[in-house]
Every structure is written in structure tokens, then in C-alpha cells.
Length: 178
Image 1 (spheres, helix red, strand yellow):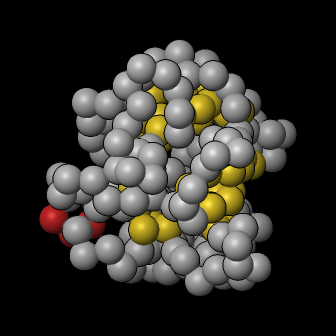
Image 2 (cartoon, rainbow, N blue to C red; image 1 turned 30 degrees about the horizontal axis):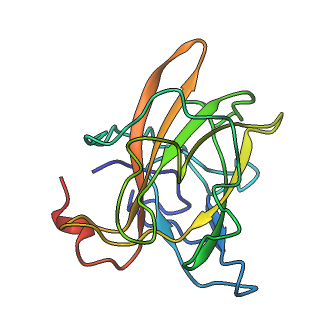
């Protein structure tokens, strides 16, 4: 199980959107209480109580498609489901922002299916000068026996690719996932 940057000393893997790294809000609800357990080091170093814990890799799975387009909005006019606006900040091992890092996201659609022909619910983005990013997507749904998750690969020109997943807190399937 991957570790994340958080504000606690016990090295847990739950991100609290009010005190820690990733900010998640549901576009249908102004202040969503949804938390996402992530494996991307998204800490904000302005918090003096925060430490940076390196992220471990997680499975890529069989549904990765290379060469996804650079697009931050995965939604179309026909997108059904609970909308999710996901933001975060990517940092290096010293908790410094990583500007220009490439994040390559992919996830299932509202029917629990991956698009293996095109690039629906897939896209790459670059972090800004502060290492920050955002995507406009749908809240993950279940497929097979996998927990709710979004895949992501993080890379820079000078570092190896980190492949990991973001999970929804409280999902009972998360603890039994590979």
C-alpha cells in the first residue's frame, strides 16, 4: 500500500481535505466531505506540521493506454454520473513543488468500463509553476471486485515514472485491493 504526504506523525494513508494534501470537491456540492486516499505525494509544504513521505508504486492494471491527449476535462455534454473536480500538488522528495510534471490519468466510465479503443475518461496534464494540477472528471464507480479508484502515472524528464492509484476513503474494498 502506498504512502502519502499527510499532517500526522503516524504515517497513515488517509488524506483529510481540510488539513492535508488533496482538495476534492464535488461540482454538485460546494463543500464535499469526500476524501480520497491517494498515492501521489500532494503535500503543501506551507504546513509546518507536514512531512513528505515517498509514494510507493501501485499496479498499473491491464487497461492503460499510452499517448492519451493533454486534456484536464474528461467530461462531455453526455457525461452522466457524479462530477468530481480533483486538485492537488505534486512534490519531490524534499517537498518542493514539481512544476511541469506530467500526470497521466485513466479510470472507468459510469458503467464501470474502460475505453480501450479511444481516450474516454483518460487524459494527461502538466503541473503548473507551483506543482499544482486539476482535472474535471466523474467520481469513480465500481467494476468487478476493485475498489473505487483513479489510476495515475506521474513523471518528469529527470525521474522514473511513478504508477499509482487514488482511492476513495471508506470504501470497504480498498483494504483487500492488491
